[in-house]
Length: 292
Image (cartoon, rainbow, N blue to C red; front, side, top):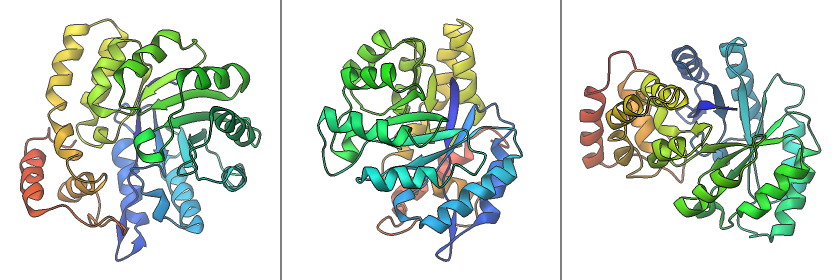
């Protein structure tokens, strides 16, 4: 796995899943150079999406993407049995693999994390992406533990590294085998991670100026550092505003203003952006390249 993967938002309208807007989003993004879509992750507000709705979202995405991009599905929870069962429920669908977040709230030991991922991986032969996001889950998947998993779980082939710890991230990039793709999930560290050997990123910010995010990765891959840095400076300014209030509220506001989704609606406990941020986002959207 390499390149830019988009953790797509889940559009809502009047409390329901907005499949029309979802299809519009997929049509918009499928020819932008993305390496794939990741559905029902953090940006997709998966804790608020009911199981039947989740399947509808995945089915609609697969239909709209028409085989042109791989689709990965986020699965997670604090019960290994429930997570394994949820993953198994997608095996009849044409998904490329799964983004599996570390169990939250329980704060398992390294042994517990290893057994969790092994149990979940045993339900599929498809690609697993381990998702390490300690500030949300309360547990950090250490590099030693991750590398043990990579060595012993054949289908664990990538990690979404969202530790926010540059020291841990650089150590992982130094030690990761070629068989493990390190995909940064820290949008502000995208350029830095790529320059230090990351295979790509799973980036919420890439909903905006998508082709420029792709250009950064392509330039790094072809060893055009100055070109990559110039492109990065053109999009890095977007990121602080998009994360200044709870994700994906600012992002959905921008997509709504761009006419890509019918409503900026999120599900409780998320609400809406503040008036002050809305004004900043209006200026940001006005400055985006046409059509992206």
